[in-house]
Length: 304
Image (cartoon, helix red, strand yellow):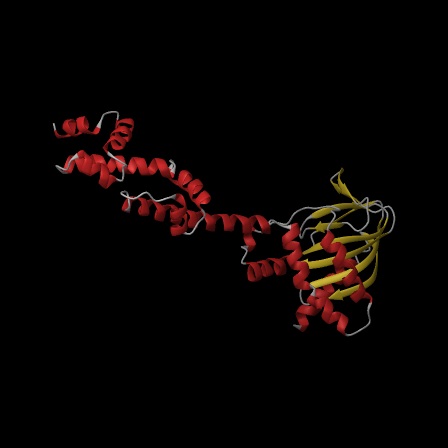
């Protein structure tokens, strides 16, 4: 642990003291188990490129002039207002121009640490995690959190380091929530789980219909039996089966009548009753519409 903490302290120091790139004054700094934090006053000489860091860095703009970011020669963003937040992604290169001194709070989390946190705390596949390239966004969460972190950074109380170390879960969780595709991953997983549940509900509803063709079961009863709302069941049933529940019931009853006529000597009235039709006339109407021929004539054709 001592070596790891020492390496992190050295890495933070190297990152902040790049005097060849930035004129940097570290007002306050902290190195914890996962979170590193620093309040800096920075200034570039003309335009400079910063990149290759292994930390994701949330930059909260406290004061100073407008910072500009470039991709090659093209300006890709600027901080025109204070109390906005920028994410600098681990491994990315950024061109910066800071014509005046800027006062910023930096919060650093190692990319491996963040991905490990995503896996352990939220069961997110680290390989599918992508960070967003966001510049000078209004982030109410950071606007509330930054003063608390600054207060502890400026404090000489021993408890302050304990407090700052406790912020690591908060910052990592917020990075994932607001500056990554974690929400999309969670929503896609939820939709997949709902899809499996819906498919199971449709299969159960289909089985229930076929086992009870002689009964009129309402969609409310079906939904209650399979554990989803009637509206969702109707929508999922149509998507899964290609027909509405009502159409499926009619088609299933027509198929029942056809098989029964072919394999028994029962009267059409008996068959209509067992198939769940209101009467023989109702059966004849539905059968003719589906098969193109009345059931009596179709029975003779099938047997002929």
